[in-house]
Amino acid sequence: MKKYQLSDYHQKALNDYGLDDTWPDGVLINAKKIEDQFLDDKHRLEDFPFVTIDGEDAKDFDDAIFCSQNDDGFHLKVAIADVSFYVKPDTPIDKEASKRTTSVYFIRKVVPMLPENLSNVLCSLQPKKRRRALCVEINFDKQGIIKDYKFDRGIIKSAARLTYNEVEGYMNNSSVPDDSFRESLQASFILFNQLLKQRTQRGALDFKIAEPTLKIDRDENVIDVIDRSRLTSHKLIEEFMLAANIVAADFLEKNCKKGIFRVHGSPESIKIDRLSQTLKRRSINWQGGIEDIQNLPFFLERIQNRKDASILNTLILQAMQRAEYTTENIGHFGLKYKKYTHFTSPIRRYPDLLVHRLIIATLSNEAVEDQELQGLLEYCSAQEKSAEFASKQVIQNLLCEYAANFKGKSFKGFITGVKDFGLFVDVPKLFTSGLLHVNDLPNDYYRYNARNYSLEGKRRGNKFSLGDEINIYIGDVRELEGKISLYY
Image (cartoon, rainbow, N blue to C red):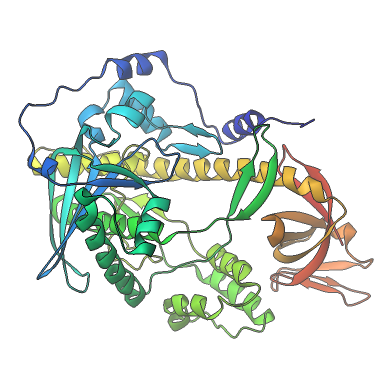
């Protein structure tokens, strides 16, 4: 008999991070009243066979693409759900959305930023249905470098709702069965390859970290955990959304007194020093100088065949700063962009909705009130972090359930954290980590070395350092707390 239901984990995560999955009655009433009366006139964007590409379980389709190739290069249209048409500033729905700021994605549960009548129906770019969109049209040269762009508010009718797996099959077989969007997808594949080359040339970071896919039966038991595969089709959509985001950032910088940017600062020196010391203990000579930091993509590529590659990627990622929203553009270190924003997901991210409002106001020559914008963006960054941690907490709860099946079993692990009270050890085969308390280490008097991030035995000379490989056993498991005790 299971100790806990999935709903127990959901509720604890919501409570722990101050998130709310209930809707005020007034918001739901307002959302149900919203209907759309489209004009009889056909909009020019309806002539193009846009397609959406999402996961099998997706319901909120907020982006659709169309691509063509010509003698000068490529033309890409990225249509994004025009949420701002329905969600007006200071309305009950807007106030609730600005409170939530993001949708929260749990296993088998979504806490949406907008009521479902909007997120899954009116705003969702469903196939064969007229939907309002804010479209950015981008012209690329033959090498995939952006030449120019323009924004247009209008109506689209998606030709098809495709899944990542379907598009992956089309890419592998070099064929698209549907005539209506065949040429568009084939042009997309060619443009995507050019954008990948551009990504490599500019030196964007690409971390390869194992992420779990949990297989859960009808009784909510975790029956297996496997490494999540990242398909090429995922990367295609990612590259197209990146292109849309950087031209949106460029538009804001050129046209708005105060823009909205997604920034990622350079790593702090103290974290780089810590990383350098850790890598040296792994027999990797990396000094962490300016040149080393700028060449991190090549370093990540160099270590990818090591057996501890995933752990090393994790340690390097831990040395990075978090990306955040702000009105001050400082660029994006990880993506290697001088300007970047979030434009492509207004159904599930409030900053994207704000970006849409700024673009539309500029196109309409309307004034924008922005006195409290920076404070709102800081709140959005904080809420994003809470939503991310809540989602990870539920995954950890389930991973603990799975790990409980292996009590007393031995596994290889890597030390990813060192404190005076013990070691945090990542167990790759179980896709989780646990605490090895100092009292469960070989009998000795251990001194915590804060400089070297290690526990050092004073009598017997035992030493446990950040990044070391270590054999451990699974001990007590507390599923609801998401904690695993290990022993040596």
